[in-house]
Each structure stands twice: as C-alpha cells, then as structure tokens.
Image 1 (cartoon, rainbow, N blue to C red):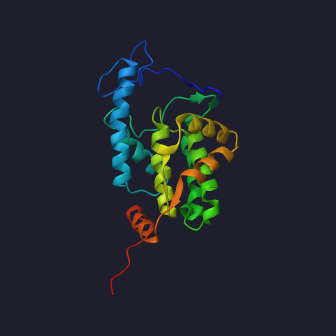
Image 2: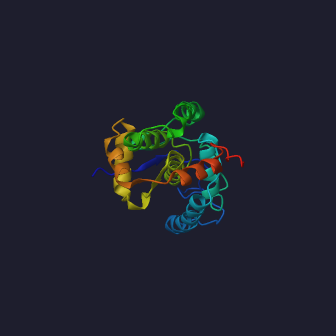
Length: 220
C-alpha cells in the first residue's frame, strides 16, 4: 500500500522554535511523548463525546465545537480553523477558502435533511461521500480524523444507524480517504457497509432531539 505523509508549512504560532513539535498546553517538546499524551487525552474525550453528544446543526461550527471539546486540554487553538496549508499526498483545501468550501458541503448535507430520508441501501455511499469531503476540507492543524469520525458517527445516528470505527484498521482508513480525495468512494463505501448497523426508531428520535433536529412529542 502506498505510504502517505503529512506536509506542513512550519509556522511559529503552531510549533516550538526550530522544531516540528506543536506548541501544547502540557509544554511537551518531544514528539513521541506528545503523541502519547495527546492520544490518551483525546481518546477519553472522544468516548465522552459519543456518550454525551454535543448539540449542533451538522455544520462547520458543529465540527469546530467537536474539535475544541476533544483537543482543548492539549492545544490552545483547538476548534480554530488552521491558518496554514496542509498536504498528505494531496493538497487539502487551501486555508483561505475553508469556510467557502465548508459551506458547500454542509449546505448539501442540510438539503439532504442530514440523511434522514435516505434509503438504507444508500447510507454507506452517502456517509462515504461526506466523510471524504470533510476530509478534503481538513479544517484543523491537527486532529482532523478524530473530529471527523465523531461527526460522522453523529450523522449516522441522526439518520438511524450506528458506526463501529474501532473495526477499521488505520491503513484501510488512510487508503480509503486518499482514494475518496480523487472521487473514488468505492473503498470507503465498502468500509461503511461493514461497520454500519441500524438502530431503533426510538434511539434515532432521542438522538435527533438531543441534536435539535426533532422536537419532543407533546404530552396528551
């Protein structure tokens, strides 16, 4: 499998002097130590976000809210849009056009009513499409994949499904994301076909109420 590596512009606002290590609230200046601490902290926050969903409207602000929640203990800029360009085999959205590109993605999602009316056979394809497009957006300096996965898990629940990303090897996700960048969504669609399961109508409605997408039923 082809290897993909991130390429960044080194900016002092993000990195320690003469280093690629990101400035962080823990003041860890060794890359492996920071990676370990970041994973430990963000894994706990991701689990918390899945158990106690953060309300939002499935737009850029919602994605920023998730990123801020997951990374706020590590980075001062958690939830903020990046101010540099990033590449990983392909160039992600230019930072100057993040909001413009995001508007196109999330307006389309809203027009689809957040997948609530999409037939079950089409759900894996639509989830693959939106995960691929949000990955192209890549709005943050670090932690895009983790925020994206929580966002897509929320979207699936709002549509009536659960996702088990834990069953996806990292190499598979990287390869599927790279191919989706080139509009080849087949591998990502196949991935979702394997990890998506329906939830009950009651679970779906409860989640949509939490997100503000549905109103509670009035008592007689």
